[in-house]
Length: 477
Image (cartoon, rainbow, N blue to C red; front, side, top):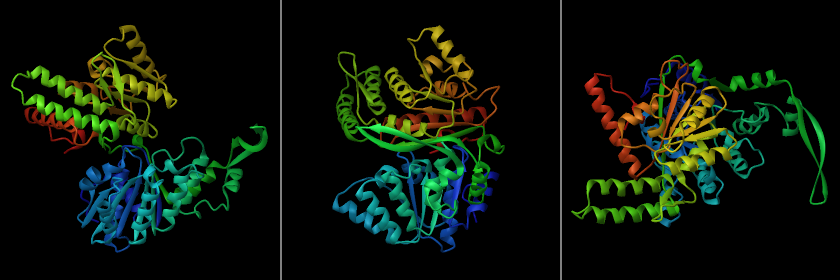
């Protein structure tokens, strides 16, 4: 196997363990590079003549990245064609989809798991698999841990059609050991060897029967008194999975960069397009100063972040904010504790509220936060009382130590290179004992990409001056 990008030792181990298997689980922590392993495995099976297509079902915040970033970077030298789900239902779009599985080369299609819940999305996935020899991959497979959910049942049905199946997650158990049941059922029901979910739960836990009442009717249910036989459960999973934690991967770099590509939609997209059109007219005027241009560009940036400031000074928040939804999605699997950076105060307020609704402990601060409250938040974070700290670089980007953080998320960036580097290094400094994953949320075809490009260029200039080796900072191009 000629790899396009050289695998780390743990990635090579995972590849060797899984390459010829019909079903396999990559229980690799976020930031250890499990996506690369799956891409290498798909290329290997394609060259061996065992598959002709790869279907990836992933969270909303991830599925586009497979096509725009991960596959171009890591796919070995094989012919391939990759496309991601857009949800377009025009006859032309439907025709293009129908033709997609029938060409030459490895055909790669990625779709978000919520789209599989729709008739259109599910039917296309069925068609895609039936017209090829497919490997189906579930990225962040805890999304199918609820065996009764409609999307879980549909994903299971798709798995039955595919000769090769893979699941990926760094946290296979998020609530209880029962989480693994549905994930393993997708891979192969014989792994666990139980005839029913009831038999599985009663083998690995002592259950108590309870009686409840609702709407005037009595019903019976069971609760867990205590779990048992978990060593046996581990032994059942081990031959069919590869487990890897960041702290065990001594060959990993300290800084791991990821970019999550997103697309604006709905009112947010319409507002952005309208504002952009108005700005183009404004910029044509010779009377607009450079300062005014920055203010107008800032309005675009705010829309991407999910809000707009009205003439009265109040803020309007957009429904279905794509960045906020992606952030909540990421937080389901992120390695905690986590630091989230955002440029605007309104973004910080939105994020703090959303994180609190997820049940995580969170603190926020920005320019108006008094010094005492800032110190309390920093100390609580470092002492282990907070899961998430949300700030803007202007308030917290310099002079503080946050080495407890494992994940750093940039909800929005500014143009200031120094602010970016300084904010990164609040975590990456003396006293750090683990690698750190940096994730940028980037809406494609928006001001986000222009800002990220500017920061990359400034980093390149810095590397030339300091004679540092070129880095993969901010996910490369």
